[in-house]
Image (cartoon, rainbow over all chains, first blue to last red; front, side, top):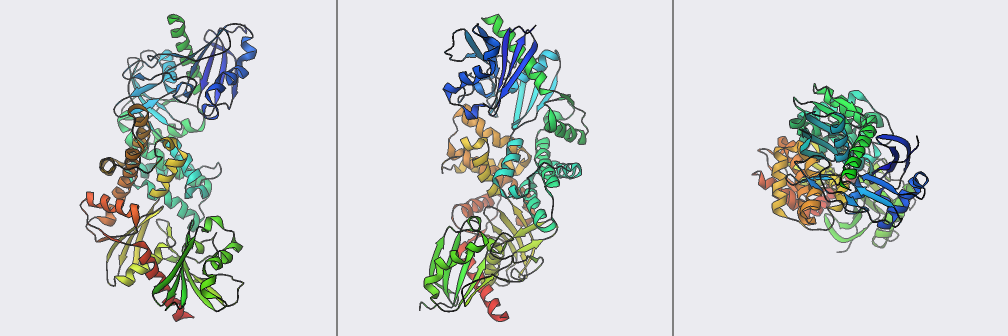
Amino acid sequence: MGETDWIAVDWGTTHLRAWRMSGATATAQAQSDAGMGTLTRDGYEPALLSLIGGWIGDGDATVVACGMVGSRQGWVEAPYGTIPTAPLSGHFALAPTTRAGLRVHVIPGLRQNHPADVMRGEETQIAGFVAQNPGWDGVLCLPGTHTKWVHLSAGEVVSFQTFMTGDMFAALGQATVLRHSLGGDGWDETAFQSALGDSLTRPERIAARLFSIRAQGLLHGLPAGPARAQASGLLIGAELAAARPYWLGQSVAIIGGGTIAGIYDRALASVGLVATVTDGTAITLAGLTAAHTLVKETT
Amino acid sequence: MGETDWIAVDWGTTHLRAWRMSGATATAQAQSDAGMGTLTRDGYEPALLSLIGGWIGDGDATVVACGMVGSRQGWVEAPYGTIPTAPLSGHFALAPTTRAGLRVHVIPGLRQNHPADVMRGEETQIAGFVAQNPGWDGVLCLPGTHTKWVHLSAGEVVSFQTFMTGDMFAALGQATVLRHSLGGDGWDETAFQSALGDSLTRPERIAARLFSIRAQGLLHGLPAGPARAQASGLLIGAELAAARPYWLGQSVAIIGGGTIAGIYDRALASVGLVATVTDGTAITLAGLTAAHTLVKETT
């Protein structure tokens, strides 16, 4: 009870989350905004210790971390494993530390050479899904800034494809004329579904349909809610058209929480596909636990 | 010789250009970076006078201006003309001034109600093209931040469509993960043509093919030149696929100068279309001259 076996860490570009683990059970959680984007190389150890110092005291500590912390610009580079492969098959990297007794194992991402593609962090979620669903064959959809579609078979990642749909949506709202149109948090499901259907059929029109959102604002007073929903529908519609070989006639599991998982779920429903939705945090913890088991076996 | 009949002005979001005109001939030129984006409403008159003050001395002065200066956020709003219409058919607006004898006529843009679309500045270039090519029927392509495709018949704009291709290209390089990939000024024509062809055929893949540029950099060391050319080819390929009803079997004139006009010219050549390319500045001056003639007739 309250014992610290090891520490699980999810460390991305914009966030750092840590869990105190007793076996496969989280007994405490902490987080900060000390993501990779805010850190120089010597900032990682203090950022981590400021979160977990109270859990580990002066004793030895084993940390298992996934995400951009293992990229070339991260704490230590954990070279990609190459698909087809099991999700945790690359070489774990040991981060350089100054505190005695602290061992930080960093999980490697996955690479696909042709077409060129990479992931870092999602491989851990995939491992968590495999641990919770042994023998499952099908397709995982991991929505986010860089949404991944992953073909999983016999516990191995067979192929994957990344769409920078979320990254493009954010950039449209920040750095194009649509910054005047996409502010606020509103939504309009009818506008989303309509734009989604248009874009599934005519994805090439995306740059014209996006500009038309601005023109609808100028000429017809289009509010931010339907504007955001239209832009999202246009981008996700084109993505679904391209990802058709992944989802058509397949078992699809969406991994993730919150608004974006719901949007993908409804988008897939509109093309007649019933997906399952699995909470991203639980899956990440299951994957980090699987990785910890590997670390114990090999050290 | 050197006489100032009137002043022609092209005033966009990021630039201000003025010409001292004697009839249809420019006898001097001046420019600054005092675009709409840098100005509050009471900043327009001083910005203009700092450029043209030496030309007009203490006398009366007639100025004819096109561009975003006539937008809602500009010096004075010049309400859009509605297509189908001749390019200069809206109501010119008179900007509020404090200097005695200064009259600034602002050219209105054009609107299309369905699908919603707008232009401001391009209508003047279209008028210039019509003045130089009376009786010409066909399609104009005006490449830029918001590229316009315009169907012109019997001197009237029949329909038009805006693609925010240039705006998206800039945003990808500034505000997405591709900021690591698209820096610098390099180019690779083979990479451009290959991406263009792919995107013409499979435009829905754009968000995946764009992410793959980043992955090619991480995995295969792709340099900035081919990266930029790929991204441009992907965006323009999707645009050409959508704009096919505009260019297929049509006479197409590209209005504009420099790198971007050449890129569109080569892109159209790759689909078997021989376009003409007309210098944008000369066309703008011809359009402002046509507008000045209208101003003289109605005042």
